[in-house]
Structure formats: C-alpha cells, structure tokens
Amino acid sequence: MMTRDTLRFDSLQDAGPLSASGLLARRFRLWRGMDGRRQMYSVYAAEEAPDYPAAIAIAVRMEGTRRIPVWTGPAGAKARSAAMATGAQEIHLRILPDAESGTLAPM
Image (cartoon, rainbow, N blue to C red; front, side, top):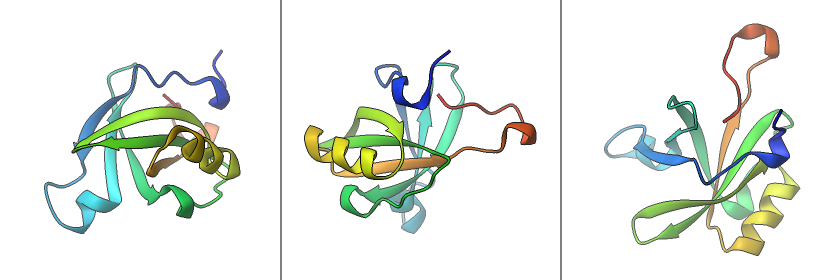
C-alpha cells in the first residue's frame, strides 16, 4: 500500500486548467493519476501553500507553459521544503475526503 509520502509522480499527467481562461484557470488545475481519473487541485505559489493536514501536495516546476510534477507527498512544511529543493514554483493541493465519504483515493 502506498502512503502519501511514497506516491509516484512519474505517472501524473497534467490534465489542464479547470477553465480555459480567467481566475479558475489560475486557481485550479486538473491532474490525471494512475487510474486515469481527473482530480482537481488548488494552485498556490510554493511559498504560500497552506498547511492542510489531510491533503495531497504536488510540487510543480514550470517549464515554459508546461507544468512538471517534481514531488508528491503531504501538504505543509514538507511540501514547501520539497518545492524549494526541487525548484518548483507552485504547490497543487487536493484535500482528501473522509474515508467514509466515498471511494476517491489519493493518486
């Protein structure tokens, strides 16, 4: 079983912004995981990402207009440190649902 610290980011695929333009495109991003489902993440500047205890974080480095995932794990100080160490400009966060609320799982 994979934990939040051992998620594979090499299988993540950027599925684009939530909306083609405007505020939603800058604030939310869709990622496709190993199971093929799209999942919505909130986008933060790497140094401004909040400490949500039940969230998955993706540290993302920008290469032109492409977003490259360089680290995945728990949100908070660990994600901000990883972003700094890998040169990531953004942290994308997905708050995980309670286990009893449905079948969605971290990527």
